Length: 361
Image 1: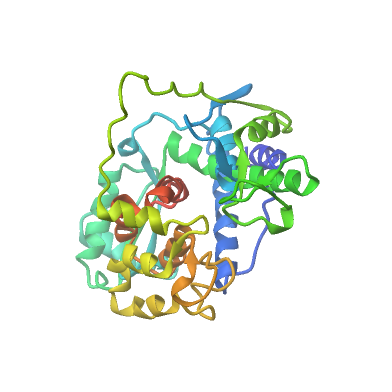
Image 2: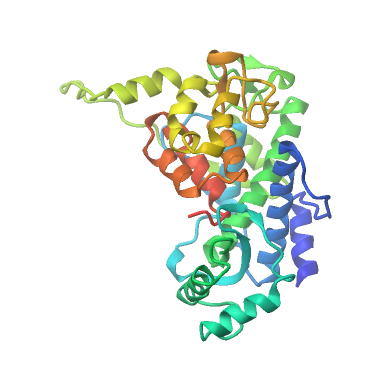
C-alpha cells in the first residue's frame, strides 16, 4: 500500500526523501513541505482513495485573475475537492508531546514513555490505542495537564478523516501543480501580469503577487499531464438600468485596510496592528521591532515576504503568520486576526487553506 502511495505521489512530481533537521527560517519552510509530502504518503497508505478523473471545477465567480498560488490551488481543488464529512467526527490517529507553552517544540515521548504510562495509570486510563475518538483524547490530555508534568508538557493530536486526508493530498498536489505552472511560465506558455497595471511581465520579474488571467489558467489546466477542465462562470449580469446601485457602507477600518492592502502586501504599521495581540506578548516584542529591520529573521528574503525599507516596508501576511506560528505564536490569536482584522481579509481564505492540515484549531 505504501509503495502504491509513493507511485501516485511520484506521478504528481512529489518525491519523498529524507532531509536534515531544519535550522534557519527558510529550512523550516522547506521542512514543512517535506512533512506535508510524508503526510500525503501516509494518507494514501491509510486507505484514502481520491476521486478519479475526469476532473472538472468551476472557477470562483467574478475572479478574472489569479496569483500563481491561487491558480495551483484551483487545479488542486479540482483533483481533491473538499469532503463533506464533519470535522467533529474525525478520529485521532496519534498524539504527540510538546512543551506546554511552546506547541512548536516537541518533546521526545519515547524517552518519557514509562513516565507517561504512569500518568495514564494514575488517572485510571489504559495505554493509548489508535485511532481513538476525540473525547477519549481529551481524557488523556486532561490527565497530563493535572499531573506533575502538566506545567511542562501538553498533548497535541493528529486527526484523520476523509477531509483531513483530502486536504493533505490537496496541499501536496497544489505544491506540485505550482511547480508545473512555474515551468510553463518560464517556457513562455503562460503569461504573467503585473498586479497593479495588469501588463505582461517577464518570468524573472515575477513576485508572489503576479497575476495570471483566468483564460490562461483554463488553457494551462487542459494541457496538464492529467487534464483538468476549469470552467469560467457566466459573467455577472449588469445592474438594471432602472435601479441605481445601493451605496456600500465603508467603515473607517475597511477604508484603511483597502488603502493599505497594496499589491505587495501590508505595510509595517498595518502588520503590527493586525497581529498586535501577538506582538504584545513579551517574548514577541522583538519580532515587532524586527518588522522594519531587513536583517531580522521575520523580514529576511522571502521568509516574511518583506519588500522595501523601514515603515514603508510591505509584508505578505500569510508568510509573517507562518513565521510567527513556527516560533510559538498561539494559533487561536493568529486565526482570530485573520477572521476579524479587515486588512487581512484578502488573505483569509489562503490562511484557512494553508492551516487546514496543521491541526491548529
